Length: 212
Figure 1 (spheres, rainbow, N blue to C red):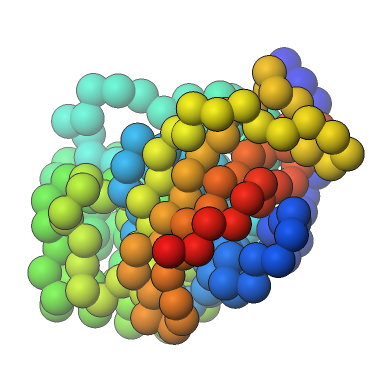
Figure 2 (cartoon, rainbow, N blue to C red):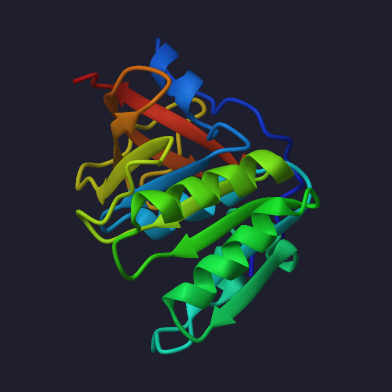
C-alpha cells in the first residue's frame, strides 16, 4: 500500500489554465449540503474528503446495501483513519443520522448515500443542520433524485481520454480522467471540466476547462 496522504487544509484545487468558476465551486462551500450523481460519484466523494478541513468524515449508508465500502481503498486520497462508516436500517434513519452529524461542529464532512427522492422539507432540514454545525454535506444521489434545497449538484462520469503528461500532471497510468459537470449552483454559474487526481502530490488537476 502507498504511504498515507498528509492532512491537507481545505483550499482551492490546483488547476491548469483559467478556471475561476471551478475554483469558486470546489472545494464545496462549507455549512451547505451538496449533491453528486453519475458513475464517478464515489470518486467525487473521495476527492471531497481529501479537501475537507480537519475533523471527522462520516459516510452514511443503509444496512440493506450489499456492496461494502472499504476505507483502505481510499488511502490514495486521504487518511482512511479519519473516516467513520455509519449504517442505518432505512432512509428515514439515515437522514436522522446525517442531521445529527451535520449539527456536530467537530464533523468536517457528512456523506449520505440517498436511495429515494428527498422532498423539500427534508432537504431544508439538512441545510439547516449544516448551517448550525458549520459542516459540509454531500449526498450521493441516483440520477433525477436531487433536492431543490441542494446548494450545488454535480454530475461526474469517467472520461475515456488519456490524462496529459508534463509537469504537475497525473501519470497516464495512475489516474482516470473524470468529467465534472456542475448542473446546479445556487451561488454562481454552471460549467464542465475534465479533472484528474495526482496521487503523487495529492492534488487535483483541472485539465481543460470546458464551460457550458
